[in-house]
Length: 270
Image 1: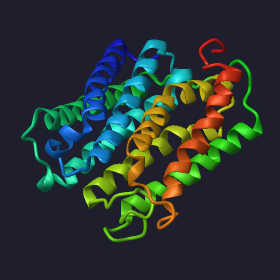
Image 2: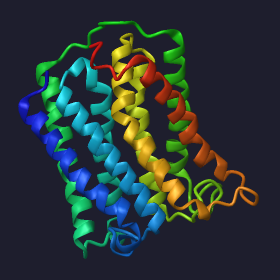
Image 3: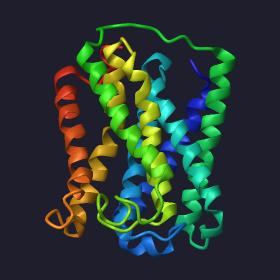
Image 4: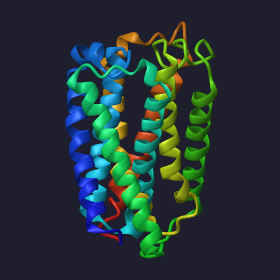
């Protein structure tokens, strides 16, 4: 297993994301104008949802701290911090660090990256073995993981290369016009989700899939809550593509919720 240093850094990352996420989620209107770059209140609340989801995922990972069970969640968390910090660096000319909330976002990503570096160094130093244990996954589980990776991965690739004005950036899918800064931030979020889900395609232990679903589920809950909070922004009659953004979270969230209630969260079976 990875070192205690890596574990406590993961706990610290969870705490920072929790504070950041609660502030952005519940004070989105007040904090959007002073965030690290130009965002709307809906975007700020959505980013807050990411952060609360990250906090829960990091906490679950640190509390269970069993490599064979949590490694996909750590892959997501490490990838998120690294790629989001890369986006900040790429758009550093538009980065505004005048308000404490902007500094908190920047510092949280830096701690996330430090956590990732220590974890990656631990991994190559200790070489923890991936193990098959407990109940086995079924082909349907791996097909669902493959479908998720393909769909979310395509969204990530599109967001990484699309330019402002392209389909989906002008309110066609997300209900507001996105700057290139915001578009790339969303894209690497989807990329990180893809990185975390990729090992599930060949994972043979059901508990690993259940743990990842459980650890990631707060992302679904809070991003969906942000959608309902700003539901008035959506116009499905004029822009039916917006159904993709709303529907995706229900298509992912409801089946996962059913599986978690039926099969458990992975811990009992580990």
